[in-house]
Length: 87
Ligand SMILES: [Zn+2]
Image 1 (cartoon, rainbow, N blue to C red):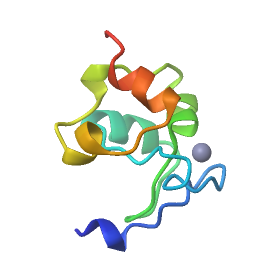
Image 2: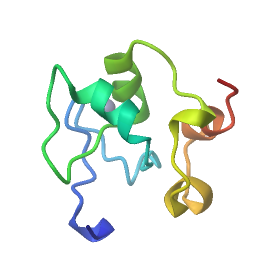
Image 3: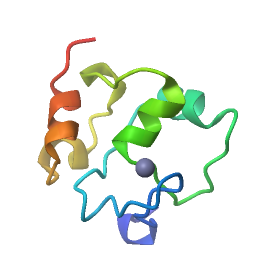
């Protein structure tokens, strides 16, 4: 899957996660938990706020994968905060 194939618009709120600097990868367990009741189509994304709303909690560092985009991406203040948050 190439990053350019991904639709950067959050499926829940319509925010452009590229412009909003909230493009990130979470672990499979986290994504599964968030999409179990309400599916997200392939190549679609959620912003930090909508993912947290679905999970019912805030994201912490351990929810994210080692993907490049989590380390070197252009991140919003909210995403930076979560990437550094202790579980
Ligand atoms: Zn959203």
